[in-house]
Image 1 (cartoon, helix red, strand yellow):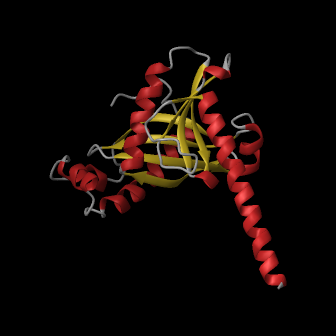
Image 2 (cartoon, helix red, strand yellow):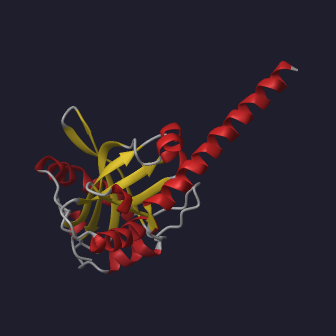
Length: 216
């Protein structure tokens, strides 16, 4: 997979990757009971590059994370998303794909978590799909995250015409949006708002029932 045009990251983020990615890769590479880990190990020379002080890797994609909680999602769909952190698609020397989440605290960047396997592979497929569709400077690849609904998706956003936005989920979720399938903004927002509202109502009704039971 080739790097996307938007795979540019800041110098501080690259420095954080050089400091911290090695330990995250080492942890994942110990789990060789997974097929994708065995394949990555088999693809490297006899002297693994990940054992070097600074392992080789490529950044194939980089996106700003936009997230929200249930109430704003139910009320406003994608209109009140807040930026925070970055998601990178990284490929190790052995070809292992990884979804890397980076955060910033007091101007200090750090790797918050790393995932390999199906999530990383679905992220790669979504970036390739949405990146191919991104042909205008006004379009931006974003990473959509709504943890309360298990939503993770690649979001192709158009600043000039947001109605043309598209969403490609990379995980199973409570909104019923299928991984690797691309949805229009209208369709995705309708599902997000409906299911966010349903979850809020469900939790409220459960809270009410628990309160009534305690009162008896």
